Amino acid sequence: MRTQFNAYFELVILLFPILFFAQPSLAQKIINIDSVSRNTFGWNQQEREFGFAHFDEIFNTREVRKGKKLYKISEGKDLAAFHKGGQKEKDFEAFMDEQKVAGIIILQDGKIRLERYALGYNAAMRWTSQSVAKSITAILVGAAIKDGYIKSIDDYVVKYLPDLAGSAYDKVTVRHLLTMTSGVKWSETYTDSGSDIVKFYTHQVDTGVDETVSYMRQLPAEAEPGKKWLYKTGETHLLGSLVRAATGRTLAEYLSLKIWIPFGMESKATWNIGRTSQEFAGCCLQMRLRDFARFGQFILGGARINGVSILPDGWLNSATQTQVKLWPGWGYGFQWWTLNDGSFRALGIHGQMIHIDPARRLVVVINSAWPEAESMKRQTVAENFLRSINVELDKEIAAQKNSPRN
Image (cartoon, rainbow, N blue to C red; front, side):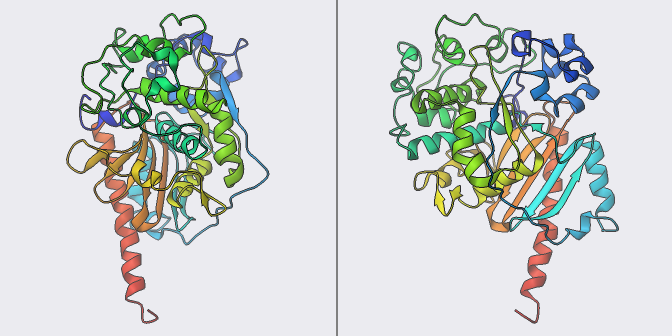
């Protein structure tokens, strides 16, 4: 963790042409191939704005199938302050422009209060999640426990991934991975070619071994499991390996069966895959803006399909409440960032966010192409914008309470 704010995010280094389709797509031709093959952090602003909406044309992905059912999102009353002629219209326009927001949607009580697109992005396109995928992976872990594939959150990881035996993960549990408290040493310095986050994608994969397991079993321990929090993209990838091993299904297939089809997402999603054809569980899940919002609404509603939760009793509360205290007002749950006001978030680099506020029955999704992967200044702007939404909603709630009809 380098600062309070840049710990929110990770830079997913997608390095090698082996991740690309054999024949360059139109998107690959538009984006400079040399730039793509180094890493996404090296993209210029034009490449980011185009590339984040075309990940599945640039990199190898696996499809998350949708079904025939559609969870309909109805239009609600405009959040007037942010619309044309509203008191905060100019502030909102400045936020969109300065933050390089490609898409934003605000749901309250499951209804759209605000939806806007920019940067050439539209409602029919998919945007990459970056590390927002971590929070989705955690939900799949819970589903695998409910389904009986994973017996306990306190099982040792090696029970499901025996190729980790004899490594620093011998006494690490599923819970430790979910809370990023394994005690295994890891460096996530994106600009350092010697850091683990870079070497992970470049290491020589052991023959016949999952790409993630191949790298992670090389790492040494630096603390007793459960004693130290450290943000590690590799360990979310490891959770993905565990879910695949336990369920016998790819992450894309399991996500499709558990959420995408039964809940009623409007479009397929795509998930980036690596050299052993397994999804990168810690990043790179592409979907439409409204499907990001549907996922947020799914979580706000208790992760229920036809009234029945896909998760074990109490799992969602544990996942979205503080398991590890970080700095004042902030904590970490099961791959979700938690706040002391009861709200929680899935976060990703370059300004990706699903913000869920149960008290206000609120879901806010932001897809962005920040020029920087991490920015304290831009994160502060985002925090201020969310506060301004709360102010307007609280005014409405107060007005309703004071209405003569109440």
